[in-house]
Image 1 (tube, rainbow, N blue to C red):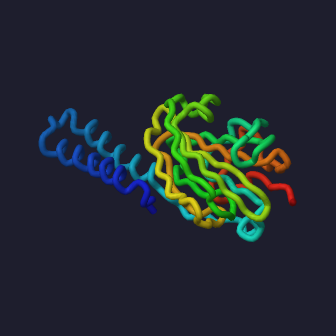
Image 2: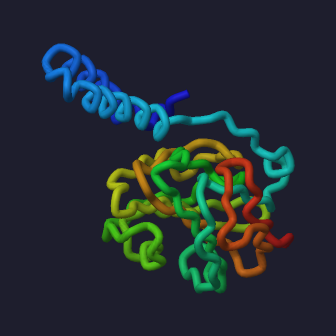
Image 3: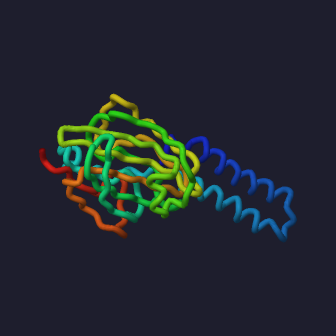
Length: 221
């Protein structure tokens, strides 16, 4: 299935690939035709691969327990650090950062049950998403969520390649863990910021699956 968040880019890439193949068949010298056909086929394949949206099974325990937080995106956990979060958590917190390569599924999912209390765009730089400065300095959307167990933040960030963020999370709306809300187009990064008391269930270097991997557990009040 192709994600609805990428229909425009998918059509452009896939259509471009088909156009290259058709053009090469009729107008390119036979010596160069195989290369042009390969290029067109690669564009079609990349469009289907990058904008794919495979079905995910959200753990039932995450759907029924507000304390459980799932990964908001596919990728690799590249950093887990402690920091202060003054806005929503208002104190000591932990940040889990996930790097998405261009080969990962880029559809983003809400990490926990709850109500969106703010959803904002912040302009910034386009540092490589593996650079840990990207969490603070890159262009991003910052989304706050509250539920019966507490509050958390999650961020969509652009990278050197990702220059467009799609975010449909709206303030005042309620979401369930694993529910789709947007995507980032090409290599990018997602952060989840939780209170310091939360139990982190993943390790640096671990690969996670959006909507399926349990990321952390908020402490019971």
